[in-house]
Amino acid sequence: MALPVDVKIFSGTTTKYLAEDITDHYGQKLGQIDVLKFSDGEFQPEIKESVRGSFVFIIQSTPPPADNLMEMLMMIDAAKRASADYIVAVIPYFGYARQDRKDRPRVGIAAKLVANLLTAAGADRVMTMDLHAGQIQGFFDIPVDHLNASAIFLPYIQKQNWSNLCFASPDVGSVKRARVYAQHFNADMVICDKYRKKANEIAEMTLIGNVEGKDVVMVDDMIDTGGTLCNAANLLMEKGAKSVRALCTHPVLSGKAYENIEKSALSELIVTNTIPIDENASSKIKVLSVAKLFAQAIRNTHEHKSINSLFLTPSI
Image 1 (cartoon, one colour):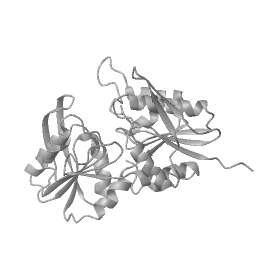
Image 2 (cartoon, one colour; image 1 turned 60 degrees about the horizontal axis):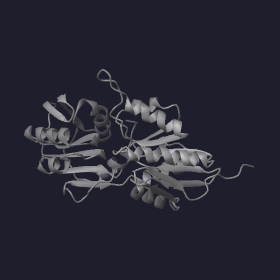
Image 3 (cartoon, rainbow, N blue to C red; image 1 turned 45 degrees about the vertical axis):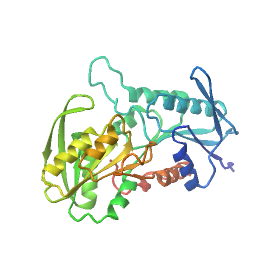
Image 4 (cartoon, helix red, strand yellow; image 1 turned 180 degrees about the vertical axis):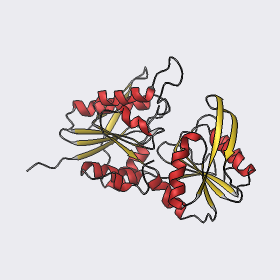
């Protein structure tokens, strides 16, 4: 008879607040890791308990700076060299996901590079949420569990009293996401089509569809500077929308994002806690926790149960 495999859950520095919440839902304490820091800026994660023969989950989102990714890789390497039986890299926000193709000459495909690095470090499996492009799963030669934030957002929407609901895609790339929500609620959908001259700067935006008198909810995987969402919100209100809100899984919120949100026509921005943010910086931001979903996904992975059973909608 095979011996039961111990589960050990560890966290990197950036996402420790989320990891502690996940372990609370899971029902055990977070594993002990010390990160030694040197005067030149180097650091060294050190696992402070035995992981020999254990099923190890390492939780860390990988937004900039690159130290967050490096810390994840070094923790995986440390667990591998300490004879962990199976290592799962739990990456709520997968950084560099927007660099998923060669859209200009002489540029790299960073998302593929990160996939290679995680595998080379010793990860046996990756668990993440709402990748910028679903095909990034194909960059890996190890299993990828792609969680869906709709399991968090749908119950929130169902509790609201939005009478004339309409879903919107803030750009062409989010059409599939918006359509899944629209189909679930049997609601209309519109598309905001944007044209960029350069990164983070929109030259022109047009609306495809009718939003007059409707409570519009935009759906996207992330919000960075907020330029796209805020311009789309302003456009939707100009076209007669009753109200405009946005669902964004990953609150990157760089540059003048908070200022842009406050000045925009958005009445509410609903995000998750995959990335740490200043919740007091804008009265319009509401944060929903993904901890319970990740805790259940970790349990299902360890017990070799389906992850798909956790989703309330078809995969996006």
